Image (tube, rainbow over all chains, first blue to last red; front, top):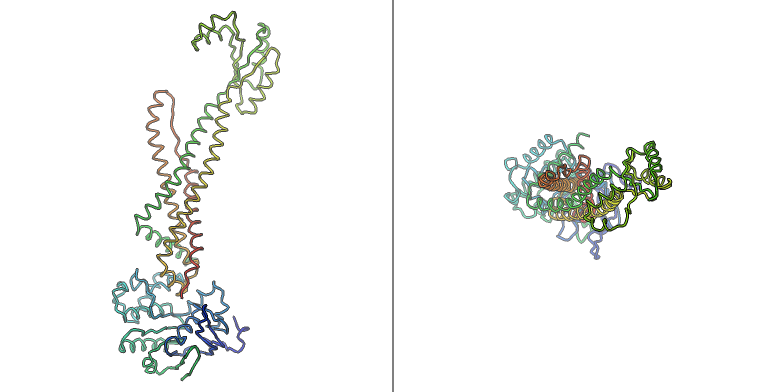
Length: 232
Length: 302
């Protein structure tokens, strides 16, 4: 593993960032010298105003971006040094939820949820069983044949969550999961994340929705202009 | 291993479904490939048939052995005996000079000219059918007989067949070059189809990468698509050729009745048909492989 490059990081850190700076081409510095460790089984909210670097932080954890300097270690793997061929295997340990959901509109809700299992070559009958279980978990089992266009905003977000958990990831990364949902919906989705965390999933949620974050009473990491401004 | 097979079957199934979902576009692409392949394959069929013809005609070459004008009956007898005992000669027929003159008068309409001649200018001759028809043996036999006494000239009558064969060899080379050009066209057509496919399925590719799809998983359906499209194009080319030959044979049937000889074009053989299909599928695979490698890297989740 990457123990040699991260001698100070014990193995039980699920996610660990040390001295991470991310500069985008064009000079925008999204993160500046960020240090952050998240243990296995934790639920952490990353908050801060938009443009503070929350999304960049999650993208680094998912190997969508690479740090300019510093190291990002996720589940024992150094993301900055990961070979492109190894990226898919890191991502299979993650469940990713995006503000724009990234659902595929050319197929049913069920087929959307099947995608992460199809990608790993899962046996089809077992995959279908798991996909239905995930849809059931987010309350969409009755709509498995519906195409995402015909789902409401809240339903689409829940569908995205079902897709993120169907392959039983050890880490769930959510970027603004309650982005444009009303408070009641947001609370329900917060409870959903809480329930995943209770079965041992490490959950990291980036949100600018302070009330949503506070109500959950999790560990809070506040980002401001690319720096960790505070933690609770 | 089972998952691996399953993965491939699944990719094949979804690819077939995708080909059938856009029947018009698929049909057009397949037709373009089919027509492009049919041209060199059709020429190949023509050449193979001509080759067969050349072999049938060339299998009956003759050697005409002309004797000197002053050759007497003794000389003729000696040469006849020599020909009869020669191991390379199957049959030798003597054509006396008077008979040759009569035939010339009868067959060419030159009777007046021949009659005006003071004497018979034609020599006695033998028509020799050889045992072995290989060009080298024929030439050796010709050269040997040229050296015999009272033989002035030996003519090999299969020259034209050999020229035809040499011409066909050149034509075959031309077909090979043409096939190379059209193979390139097939690769280009596939390259472009796959490029468009990748563009329209950009989102799916991006999301697949986000949920942990490997490049080979993403590449697979495109490769199948290219190979299946190539294969369908190959089948189309085969069907075009088969139909054309079938129709031509219908017309040739009349001709062969008139000539009282079987004139028929042969269809593409089993081995040739097989290589056509394998070749077209492989080219389709190659075109999409090039395209996928060129365009897939550009799609990374942001």
